[in-house]
Image (cartoon, rainbow, N blue to C red):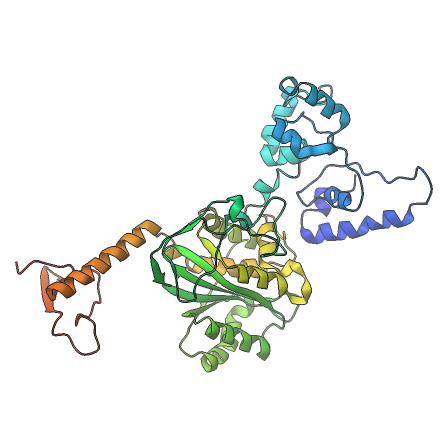
Amino acid sequence: MVEVPSNSFTQVLRDQLFELVKELDAVLKPGAGKKIIYLGTPQNEMSLYNELQERGYTAVIYPARYPYDDAHRASYGDKLAKLIADKYDSDPKKYAGKPTDPLRFNEEDLQKRELSYRRSGFLLQFMLDTSLSDADKYPLKLKDLIVGSFSLDEAPMKLTWLPDPARRLSLQEIPKVMGLKGDAFYRCHTASPEMEKYSYKMMAVDPSGRGRDATAYCVLYYLNGYIYLMDTGGLMGGYSDVVLNKLASTAKKWKVNEVVIEGNWGDGMYLKLFEPFLRKTYKDCGLTEVKSKGQKEVRIIDTLEPVLGSHKLVVTPECINKDIESVPEGDYKYSLFYQMTRITSDRGALVHDDSIDCLAIGIGYLVDFMGVDADQGINELTEEWLEDSLESFYGFATSDIGGGIKTTDSTKEGSKGTTKGVSRFTKGYKLWGGYS
């Protein structure tokens, strides 16, 4: 048994294991009948035993139960042991879900183990089914994103999501998809005709030192409950002038209102180093520091899963391709979308987590905006337009300034440079038919 939890629970350990077993191929003597046989149980979706099949090995699977139904049977394909496959195929209703070896694991014993291991663990450890485990183990999916190309100034007030095969992005559009088996990018199903300028634009930065980690950044726009991921990237070089200048130029390019920097690295020193570069390049931009707490992997998943699950994160095809094509040193493990689909709640699950952590920092900063219903936003915009039109038509507007006091102002005698002569500092005003 080669793969066990202690040598496969993180990507680093899996990569090391994949390299170690190559030595077995090298020591095998040539000649007829010479074989290398692995006997084991997969510990995760990215199992060594899946990798070996891509290297030319043949897999034979002996699960503790017969397949649960025809769809489950199809997922095993021709890898299901012939003895088990023949019995199930002869009478699926008779054998479905029954123990394959009652003398070792009878029904009562399997039920106890299923309660103990829970669904995902039982499917992996006893059904030897890696394809079904990723739905529970890897919670962030590419298919939950909405993909679309939008203006840099405005976007639709509402988008709808549906993983329609006809809306799936092709390999011509996204040549390298970083998702797991069966995962894909899908364009938005529909977009509302109502358009509005983005309410807020920001850039999040996750700093790093001069080591192997990258300084990650992402540009996020916000409108009516939706977050638009416009750009993402990683820069090697820590706090060098080249990196700090590049970050300042990126903030200016995307016209962000604010740059948010994670302050855990260097106890806030990165912000102090970056501030002069930002003021020189793009002085009309805010600069804020935030701190992160708790286990990184759990915090990232807790921040991103609700946003992806409600289909509120929008990304452009250009951003996806740039992320994949411009990873530092050509290593796809730096890719945001690779990290997104491989992160688990296990500590140290990723070799590099800079980009996904940066996205979580940005979205976490926007969380106060997220309690917005898209339809309500459209209705409020329509009501505001009608109200403005009526005020302009009747020539006056009444506002409640508190304490039971109402003021009525003429919109026809406004000062030069204003549209209606009324300066609105509150949303409490409404049109009245006359004095009370």
